[in-house]
Length: 294
Image (cartoon, rainbow, N blue to C red; front, side, top):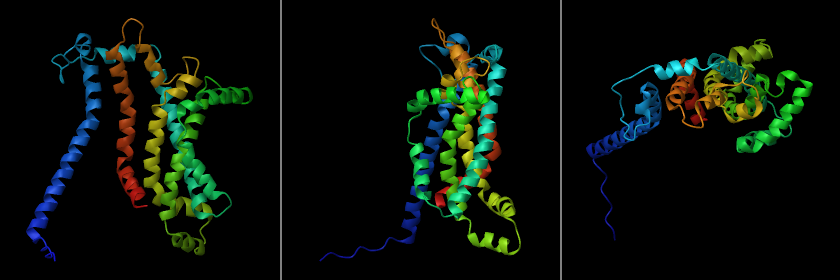
């Protein structure tokens, strides 16, 4: 017959909890350092002189920081135009995706209709299809659409916005649906009894409560559209409408790649993403928390 084990004293439990908390904090710090290190190395390489970047014994610092690589990157013909093209595509995708996803999430959460579950499953399946598998069909589809609507054909920013919107929208709808479902329907019923219209309920009640989720999905949509390379390279055939990720190819040369220019241009590319993230990060954290609870 086994003897029942004695319960741990309170001081021992506090010590165990402290050890677990310290271990979790240490793991979080290590994970954060591993995440930040590539960004640090990118900025460091952008600030290094040309000979130091390709050194066989790279140092995690530089004694001669220079802005020459940034000047070369900004001096590339059309860099400003590529930047504005990327910004236009990302902003339009974020705004349109947020508006459509919000209305779709409300419809899928508040109304019961046939094939609702099927639609949700299709949204989920759409995220599983590799982008590379769709480039050729999308090329011919966009080409045919361009013969009817020239603004959405090949070599147009409209086609790039449309394709990126199609890929970011299913995830946004799927995520926002959980936020809308978490809002008690009694709030809407009370507003309806007080005479509020459907638009007032959407704008004055649901929208503020779902705003954290919109912030989180907007960051995803912005990053997806801003970093898109495959669609930009496939659908944009002229240089005037090219975006920054595809325009980086000018730094890759047959004889010697301009690694300083690549790192400088990549550093400049991260600035809008960081600015956008800083603007919405407070709402995004609460939004992700809501998604986890949901």
